Length: 334
Ligand code: SF4
Ligand code: SF4
Ligand code: SF4
Image 1 (cartoon, protein in one colour):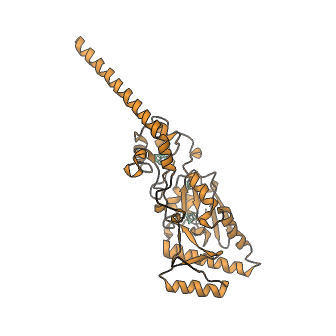
Image 2 (image 1 turned 135 degrees about the vertical axis):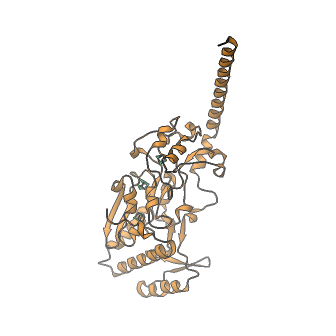
């Protein structure tokens, strides 16, 4: 090979290496500058939403027949009407908290959060927005990872996000972590993954209101390890153990209630919601204990039995007739 040619080739390689080095410096600089912004962006709630947007009341303003049923029949049995007037609307009251309207978690589509993919470690400092994780996920046929686009804000551009668990939950195959070139997604044991925490709304969940449904626990990669059950005449009451759940979202997709009665939340949002569950002023634990306490006293207190009957009537009416239930998705017995 002529000498001039060798020198041109090595010059070209040096110049490419210089260019790559400069590009890497710029990328590193950008990532360092925007990392705190990205973290703040991912943690913040979607804009314009208030606490009330996470829950919807059972609004019967335009339904005189239901109003009459909840007003008159309930009053006859319980001694109080189950209709509350609020800002010109007629809302169904919570039979266990008759001064408060009953509310339900809104459909998952309105309650979506941008969760980090599995194994995320210093995601925003390490991720170079190469998109290899999203390609790996898509090539497995799972499509759980989406890359942030302009709608997410410029700081989120190219950042891998898991935010459509009702259609594309994460199967924990961990393929995305294997292709990540920088360790932004680390290959860790499935049990160590923490993308978020699942929370069940006991008023919306089929198992808290009629009887058997184990769809979420059956879909969960760790099954009954992650769930606690309490069985009685009123159902197979199912709870998620927050320390055991890794937020993969398989349960969200499996739930037969339209819009899902189980949502995965980022840890900060989970903490916020369980402290004042559905704006009742009660924690999640206190709310659940109120249901259990009423159930436990039904043989000694006739009012307790009536309250529970109305609780189930109202919730089943809402689940079946307002929200919708996909019966083919109900998995019975573990
Ligand atoms: S673990 Fe598998 S399904 Fe989950 S985000 Fe990664 S590639 Fe997708
Ligand atoms: S409870 Fe749901 S989100 Fe949590 S690990 Fe099980 S399937 Fe995944
Ligand atoms: S799948 Fe849905 S309805 Fe069934 S037990 Fe789980 S949260 Fe309840």
